[in-house]
Length: 380
Image (cartoon, rainbow, N blue to C red; front, side, top):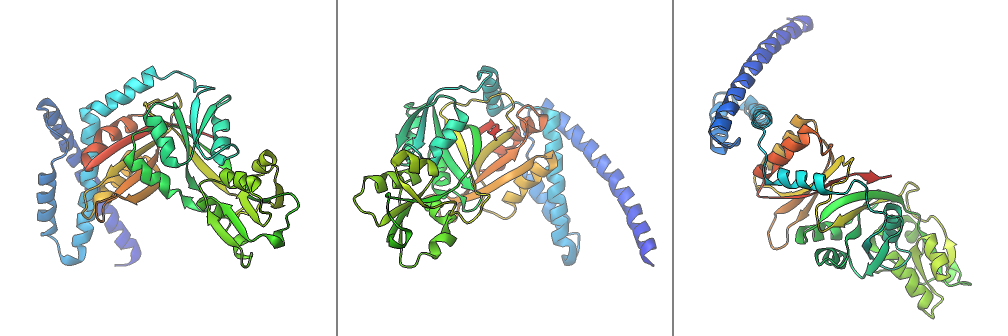
C-alpha cells in the first residue's frame, strides 16, 4: 500500500477508536452515578493495577510499553470525568470556599510585614510594590520570616522564590517543607546590581566583595574578571552595603542596589554588573491564614508522591486532562528521608473555575502528602 492508502486505513481505525472511546466514557458515566449513589471513592487502585497488568499481557513486547502509557492516560481521563460528575466537595474545597467568601475584597494598603535583611533590601522593594504604606519588621534570616508569620508577629512576609538568571532560591523552598503558611500575592521586580564601596575607593584596590548568594550567582561573569578578589557570601545585599558603610576598610565592596548607595552613602564603582540585562526576581507574599482575593488566577501546591515509576506522570496527566497550565515544577529533598522529594507546583487556573474545584478534590488522593499553599494573583 502507498502512503495515501495507509493513511486512509489509519482514518478508519481512528473512527472506530472514537466510537469505542465514547462507549467507554458512557460506561464511565454510569459507574460514576453508581459510585455517587453508594458513596464509593473515584479511585480504585487495585482494579486499575490488575487491569493494566492483564491488558499488557495480551500484546507483544514491542508495543507493551505503549499500551501501558495509553491505558494509564485512559484511567486518568476516566477518573477526571467521574470526579466532575460526582461533584464531591471535600474539606479543602470547603476551606477554600470559606476563604473566598470571607477575605476582604481589596488587598490591604498597609500591614505589618516581615522582610529578611535590612533597609534597602530587594525584599523591601518588593514589599513597597505590594503595599502602599507597609510597617516593615526586618529579620536576619528567611526562617525568621516564616516564624514571624506563624507566631502572629507579622500579618505578612515577603520572600524571594526564584530569579530569572540564578534559578530557584533553594533555601526558601527547603523552609516551605517545614513551615505552615499560605501565599496571598506574588510580584516580580527587576534586579540591577551595582558594586558599591566607600567614597574615594577605586575598583583596582578592592580585595573583597560581599553579597547574598543569589546576587553573587547573578554577577558571576563580572566577578570572574576581578583577579585575586575574594567573594564572601552574607545574609542579604542590603546587609552587605550596611556592613561596608560601617567598616573602616576602603578595600571592600558590596554587590547591591543603587538604592543602597543612596541609603548608606556609598559610591558606585560599577553599575548593572549582573550577567543578564533582563534580570528579575519573583517574590511571594505569605500569611498565616488563608486569604484569597478577587482575581486569583494562580495556585501553588506541594505534595509528596509515592516513590514508584509513573507517580509524577499521573499528576501531570491529570493537569493535562483538565487543561490546566503548569507554570513551575520544583523538587526538593525531604530532610531525613532518603531519596524522597517534595514537589512544588505553580498552576495557572482561576480559583472560580470548575477545573480548579475538580483538581483540588482529586490531588489529595494521588499523593502521600498534600499541601495547598494558596490561590493568588501576581502584581506586575
